[in-house]
Length: 300
Image 1 (cartoon, rainbow, N blue to C red):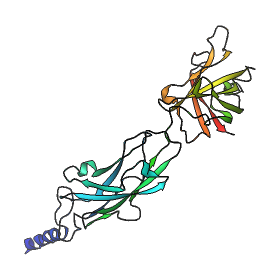
Image 2 (tube, rainbow, N blue to C red; image 1 turned 120 degrees about the vertical axis):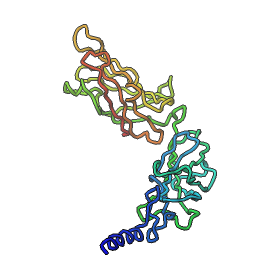
Image 3 (tube, helix red, strand yellow; image 1 turned 180 degrees about the vertical axis):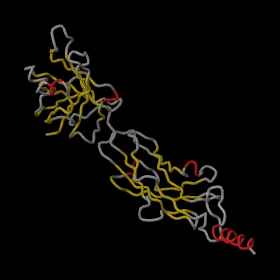
Image 4 (spheres, rainbow, N blue to C red; image 1 turned 90 degrees about the horizontal axis):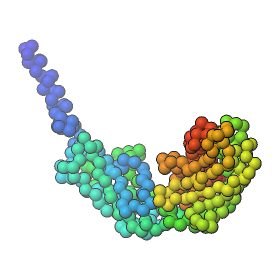
């Protein structure tokens, strides 16, 4: 009799909990359908490249078993501006192939949206929403609760032109140090703060000129400063600045030069109201440099 009582509990456990398949999903009679679940986006938004030909939007498949695959339908909806000049369809369907997705790679399928006309310069932002609409499996839904991400915004950013228009980054700006070493360390500034006027360089339409004091406590002269808006890597480059100073007799000249590529600031034609310019202070080591420094320009 003892042995019979030992066997019965194990039998009950098998009936209630069933067994697990190789994906770790219970297949017992009283467990949820392993072919049920939901789909949703993995994040809320994506920004396309300035001249991208496609944009990719990832979708998570929260379904243990979908042996015949899933067709997931989606549509596009306008958010900001006219997105139809960049997207030629109103939506589509993406297939989740059961042979390609497993627990090991998180069951992600990608919606790839072709984009057109992004090679043209744009001084405005456009965006549209990708909305999940249906799945061709009755037990699979769109999202599971109010926290599920079922709408994904695609942002088409501004695109800097090859030649900067003459009405951008011109006029009065407030100049101020952001980071500096020698000037602030000696009770003064690297760039004398105040209002400066940016004008177009007559020899380079992508450059702007302004005049400012450099280490004003030690240098009474006003220097002509140049900043160039590079269209190769969309960064701002400071032209060489030489205030004709040195930290000691026989020391090399104390100057400012453009910072290395990793330290330059990106510029955006959609925002000409504020910009930070990174530069290298004292690259010759006259005063203990080099130091990575910066100043800002804010439209007045």
